[in-house]
Image 1 (cartoon, rainbow, N blue to C red):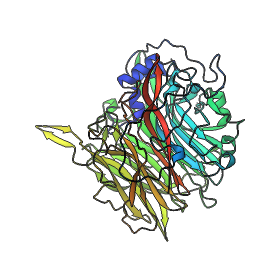
Image 2 (image 1 turned 180 degrees about the vertical axis):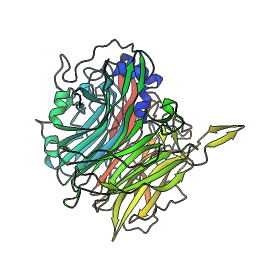
Image 3 (image 1 turned 135 degrees about the vertical axis):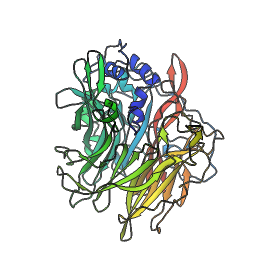
Image 4 (image 1 turned 30 degrees about the horizontal axis):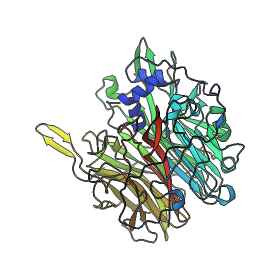
Length: 596
């Protein structure tokens, strides 16, 4: 991917890193040999992978057993009062998976989860409990657990806490040639409260000797009725593809493309689909109501510098519209126009049904153009009608992925996200992204050296589709790093919630806490958050994981909000796995709840 201006997702970049290749060499996953060839080495994989359908000698659904060692408080306390829901935990939320400390059947050890996405319905679980659905990258799938899926799903459906009742790996689905596509993470979940349907999208790959492989994005669909059924979705770990498919009975493959050629020992990538995002139009009626919208990045290795040509190697953003039952979808349309460095798309639906997409276009001078697209909806599978992308702002202090932060080594990139709300007769749009607080490009002789001593989060606002206003101050004036913002509007109250990591309590700007900023309803543009709250009392060391170390912490965290409560999904490293009888902290997906 070195010929592309846009950075590839951290999920893919990690697999091609030294730590990632070490994981693949030990992996029994059927894709491990191909991924190692893509990374430039011949496979040394010796494990025998189970099929996508079954794990020999193991039941489809594993009970929850062998509880984890207790998490260790880190001792950093916020100075502001909290209204964090105590039932979901105030120190670090609740660990939102069922992985035993000794590892899940099929996986040899406890393995990391990161990059969370979350949605919820208030009172729609069992006996009036909230229904909370989270997705995450789950590395158990590389070692034979979860039906070989590295895309996890985790569900809470009973009780007043945030405990997980069941989990699994997003099931495989065949590509147009009949070969199974396995989940490789970058998940996003979305719930349609009107139709009681639930969706999870992710990146998919496959390949084997003499077969070039397919790259695609897929959408899995289930219903609220399924998720609260102990028959369709029993408690415990859905550890096979068959068990996951019973819980998520329907899937759809989007934009399948040939991934690579492998001729005479020479591997040439062709296309890679990366970084999906998804939303659903939850309106009860109107053109496009119920549509499921999916965006992603298409890296094209058949054009430009990758083949030695004097033109850029392009990456572009596409959009697909699907029926709510995902029985039919539109053909992909390119919404990034002539931009050749596009990445990190985010799709949302305005209260009036207009579809919007934001993304970053990474420029040769290392700046990032924040772009915004508006589309008139059509009833799926008809294609939305989109206007050309408009420039929100040019970010001249971008975060560019690898080594962007000064006190953490994992990737952080400038990644715009947005959502909408109604304010009187107006529709407001808020967009957030991370950046360096100062100019990070230092000229040393004829060279440029990148140093970012502090990251922060900026926000832009638009009213009724007018040009965005971009305040010159960050949304949070705290010291140290703030990054990974995610934004969601509570459309019952029109409160805008923005979740992110902050290192403000650590002198060295290394250990992290989760923070929430809120924009109150009925404000006058341009608006900034009325207040912020530390969600996790105890800080996290993001480098404390035996498998990933500080090389990968996901590319984002998640927040959803409805009816005066916000659920946050994030990565924390406070629970111990057991490795040869010795405990060590490792990455887990967590959930916290904030009531307002």
